[in-house]
Amino acid sequence: MDQTMNNNLEDALLEDGEAFHPGFSVDCVIFGFHANQLKVLLLKMKHAEAWALPGGFVYKEEDVEAAAGRILQARTGLTQVFLRQFHLFGGPARSQSGLNRMMLNARQLPADERHWFLQRFITLGFYALVDFSRVTPRADAISEACQWVDLKGVPALILDHDLILNKALETLRLQLNHQPIGYNLLPEKFTMPELQKLYETILGKKLDRRNFQRRMLSFGILKRLEERRSGGAHKAPYYYRFDQQQYQQALQDGLPGGW
Amino acid sequence: MDQTMNNNLEDALLEDGEAFHPGFSVDCVIFGFHANQLKVLLLKMKHAEAWALPGGFVYKEEDVEAAAGRILQARTGLTQVFLRQFHLFGGPARSQSGLNRMMLNARQLPADERHWFLQRFITLGFYALVDFSRVTPRADAISEACQWVDLKGVPALILDHDLILNKALETLRLQLNHQPIGYNLLPEKFTMPELQKLYETILGKKLDRRNFQRRMLSFGILKRLEERRSGGAHKAPYYYRFDQQQYQQALQDGLPGGW
DNA sequence: ACAAAAGTGTTACGGCTACACCCATGC
DNA sequence: GCATGGGTGTAGCCGTAACACTTTTGT
Image (cartoon, rainbow over all chains, first blue to last red; front, side, top):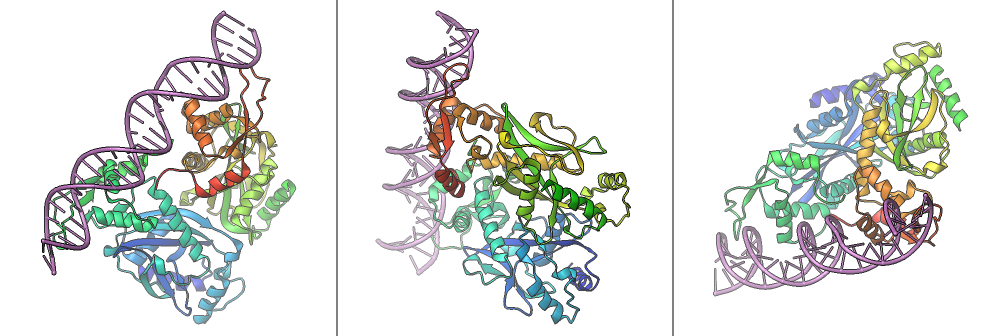
């Protein structure tokens, strides 16, 4: 899969990008949760100091959502994850000419002004929620590294990727009010304090233990298991698991509140 | 402005569409409110029975939001209105070949399979909220009519425009919980019952008079004027006006509710 | 034993719901 | 004067916020 992408990009750079939908790309903000930190999967660009969101192009006749899924799978190895488009970034200033020209030069390809790769790109932002422990980050052809970065310490990003990232986070925070989220970011089994930490980290504020628990349970999407988690110090918290049936229902109906 | 669009489309059909960002379009769901009905502005296509959402293409170097604004202005004459992108529709099946081929044929233009106008188009959906009374619908070059249609009686639409319309409505309903809306859909001065009717129509359900009023006023974005509206039968309701200052603030902060 | 984490419960406040009553206007 | 629409007020319910106590576990 990764190879496919590599070849296609190399080929495309030469072949005038005929395989792709023109002037259009997809960028993914992939969120993970680990060690009480909300993290994003970033790529370190070759031939540049800047980092970037995982992204790619859309094949002609390929569904846009499918393209995002393909890119996500290429970077994480995961399939079937929570993935939603949230905004299209189409400012005319977001031509990638500077960076992309460098990439062409690095490959000693002709950097004709009218090369498709130097044209203005419109990009659709997706955000994904994944189980950190199941991800094996893999760099793509134009990157020298792919790794998780704590949201608190995001380095300089190319183009408007910082804007995309911020918008994704904002969208995620709003979504918390409408839809249950934790399922996608946590392992199958997790404790209530873990779930709470996740929410606190996303929202950037502390929540009351008991109120949080009561509210969460009131949604009726959690199933408590047998105690366990004996390893930790202090009292052993229960494990919970999302009730798949109820969870899907809640995703559809939304959470209570509002009209 | 309208003429510009006409000419550009005609030119573009001949000139291989070099002026536009390729494979990309914008469609606008323009909502208005009149006679207790929520309405959408639709175009009746020439050479076809189907109706369509107002849409168009994006010039190279033109901001996507600006393009939507330009299209909106061309159809309604309005500028400075509430306009938000809400979803990108990019299924591969949404090639416009059937319809667009017809349009080319009608103009006796060459319908080469690889004509840019016959390629797959990705389209970004916008929804707009406008003051019905200030709109003068104007058809574009490819339409024989442009008019308001009650949401309850929307005719058959081309392509996936019904899907776009539904998604816009769904988005609007969700937005009601986060942001004050009425400002854009009503005249400067309006009565509380009118505002309520608007909400009821959007949501599709009845609301309690007093609770609605109390809640609305609690947002602190309304200013009551002198009584008036003597014309109608029965007791004269007060006029209200949105406090521009507070309204903008509420748009930023969002409405109470949630975490 | 003690500290820290986690389970469970209780109270008070505020917003929302569901009502009732009065006033104004046109027929 | 009666029907209809519109302004204003109030009691109950429920969810949330704020807070205390007990239980477990490792040191």
